[in-house]
Length: 457
Ligand code: GLU
Image (cartoon, rainbow, N blue to C red; front, side, top):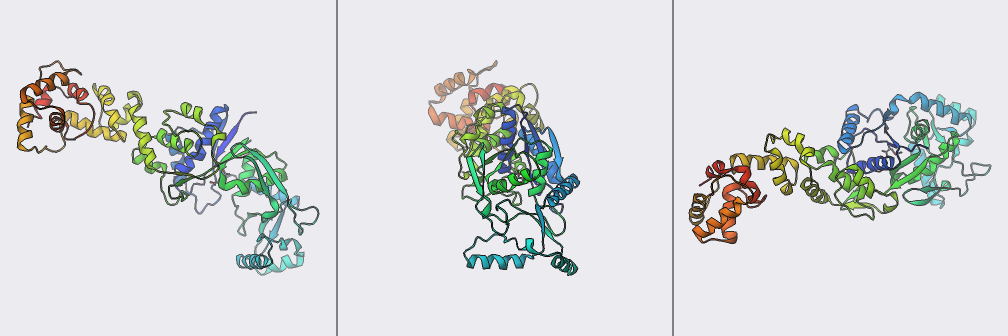
């Protein structure tokens, strides 16, 4: 059996690192099993869904390293859902209801005072044809509920009915259908809620594994019954814990917080995001993985914990430093070029500065320093000024290499009597305008003698 997974975002905003977790779990699961990955846009809500969000989602996934085998839009499949509705109606499993929201709320209140579970009491099942006709004449349109199989012969006498499945992440799961209302599948205006189209598509696209957030655990109990009602075998399910902010808040597409696009603009590397999104909230250590293959070696659904995965976005900065520090020039080359870092010495330069970067684009600042000197004139006190001038007077002749720094500083020590910090800090400032950065021994040969002399104050 070929594993087929799907990632099913609704294109109502830009995807964030929490959505990336779901997408990556699916992608890595498919990778590990030689499977396929379907990107399905859940855009049945045509009001809120937008093509620009779908396009941005695909772009973000590519950027992250996920390349879907198929892309589907639910908005192009309404006729298929209509057929499923007819099937369910024919089986007597989808029934019309006419209650307004206020009426339902009132009923829930009454049930609570009677110590009954606040679920829908299936009053609509008792409506006569005459009563339905009267509602319709009043101008009411029905919404349609799926009849959960939680009774023996009389739906008005529901009883405990356990649906169980072996979750590839959470182990054995149970949902009691008696604790749930019959779900509304079709609204008054004929539009679909998410529940039915998702099942219909999972059947049609041959989805073998549904891996999604644990906010869908209850849905799964319901959807397993819809699969069966449509005559299909339910897929295997896996529900992962959700990433939340350090204060425990969920991430939302609407707020735009920690969106992949925003993180990209902030210079966060895709593999920093992927490493955190996959390994956080598991029993694995969060380490910087450099590619999907490496990440897939650390991904195991069984290690995912059941509680929410709170995380601190600063962890991304730490991962980013590690990723950049070890990044090969070939992998950085194109983006460096876009930041003006190119030419014969670009590779040597990259190898020297990469260990000092929080973000790849920070390399551009160092490139300017190497070629043009400090961004701002450096203001020295009188003592340091004399010292730096004396130091530049004893710069060795070329050719320069990594040993030049040692030769030079030995000569400077000899000429000025300074050593340690007193010697190094003013020289670093004179050369780079910054008090920390890449090894000066590495920078000197990149800068060269003439450009160094131009920095003499
Ligand atoms: N569109 C749903 C969501 O974003 C998909 C859930 C699922 O994977 O079935 O929550």
